[in-house]
Length: 72
Image (cartoon, rainbow, N blue to C red):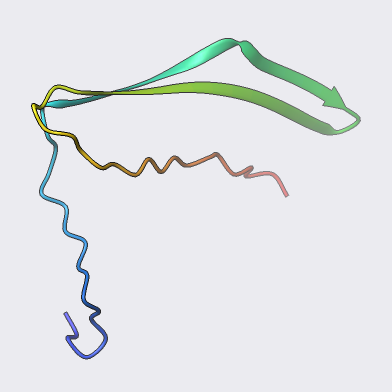
């Protein structure tokens, strides 16, 4: 690690916390696929729920990825 470019904050992952439960489920009502010419447009909805089983409040940032088409 280059300490010359380090700021006053350092993000470190300490692994999975078993007291925080995250579920990611597809929403069937939002799933939709359309074919327009040679293009296929697909809309997919997700429900992400987080449950904190700790006795203290937590601060969490949820970042999700989305698929990128491999077609050119």
